[in-house]
Structures are given as structure tokens and as C-alpha cells.
Amino acid sequence: MWLVGKDRRGGRSAQPSGLDRERITEASVRLLDAEGLAKFSMRRLAAELNVTAMSLYWYVDTKDDLLELALDATYAELRLPDPEDAGEDWREQLRELATAYRGLLVRHPWLSPLAGRYLNIGPNSVAFSRVVQQVIGRAGLPAHGVTGAIAAVFEFVYGYGTIEGHFLGRIADTGLSPEEYFEQAMSTVAEVPGTAEVMKESQDLMAARGGDTVAEMLNRDFTFALDLLIAGIEAMVARG
Image 1 (cartoon, one colour):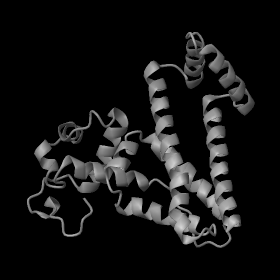
Image 2 (tube, rainbow, N blue to C red):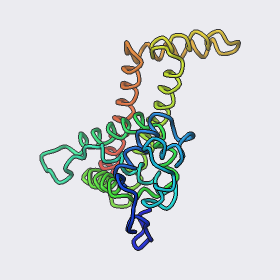
Image 3 (tube, rainbow, N blue to C red):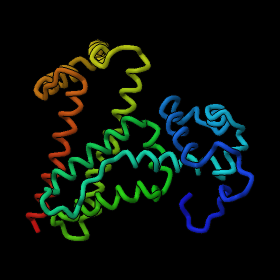
């Protein structure tokens, strides 16, 4: 989608009136949020915009092109800190970036499979990646360790946010509150032969972790795991 010189249909004359690529992309994001990736199609999008499916092909060549546009559009939601602000702690900026990315994955559960499918070289995605690189670069790691630190933090966030998004989607399908679903799930699993002892150990650990709601439990685990990763970066810097 982002290759320089790639022929785009949007430059032709006699384009369908009332449409532009931005409007089509915004509608795609809304539809993906509402119905998911599996149900997304050019025909369904055209119906949402009240146009013919062929009208969309004046602005994109393929459905994949449109999905790349939708993917990159979500990255525009991220508030990016200034990595050149010497008064800001890189640790806090990294926590801010990681937390924002987690939220993005949870709000848009269709994002994670697309992020693994495409190159993610749209302008918003590249801006995010550049700031991440600059923030972690300020930690003091040797140059050969920066990409590994980025992978450790953001592949963790990718996995955490993806699973959290699936979990919350499954809860929404039941009509239960997160707390009701969690209690029901724990009770059910505890009754399965062979798992009672494991669940007892898990319940003790979860009680030690604390949290009165599912959101609090998820946030406490995420925060502690992220702190562990930041501590690991600090330890590697100290090791020299």
C-alpha cells in the first residue's frame, strides 16, 4: 500500500462523488470494530457507505490495501511523548507508550492479526515505531541491544493486549459482567477433575496479587510485568 510509485486509482477523473479515502478508511475502522475482521468485506463496507462496491475501487486497488489503511489509521490514536524532552524520564515515557499500545489492541481486536500480516510502514505506525526506538535508545543500552529491548517490551504488550481483547470479547458475547464471567469461569474450572489442585494454587496467587475487579487484576499484572521488563533494561545498562 505504501510503496512509492505504486499506481493508485484515486487519481483518476470521474470519481464517485461524496467519497474520499479518508471517509472510506474511517468507515472501515468502524465496521471492523463493530463486526470483526472475519465479516469484513468490500461489499459490506459499500453497504455501510451506501455506495456500490465498485465505487470503492476508485480509491483502493484491493481489500488488503484498505485493511492496511485501517490498520495505520488506528495508530493515529496514540499520544506520542517527546523523546527529545530531557526533562522526561525514559521509563515513564516507555510506560506511557506501552500502556497506550495495549489500549489500542484492546479497543481494536482485529488490529493484532493485521499487525502481524503487513509491514506496518504507514505514516502513523512509523511515527510510533520511531518514538519507541528513540525512547528506549535513551536508556543507555549498547546499540546492538536496543532492538532486543524493543522486542521484549512490545511483543509482551502485543501478546497481553491481544489476549485481553479476546477475553473481553468473549465476555461481551455472554452478556455477563467481567466479574460475573470471571467468577463463573473459576467455579466451573475448579470442578473439572484433575484441575482442582492447580486452581487452588492459582487462586492463592491471584488473592496475593489482589484487585477487586477484573480490570484491576489485569492492570496490576500488566503494570508489574512491565516494571520487570524495565528493571531488566536497567540491569543490562548497569552491566555495561
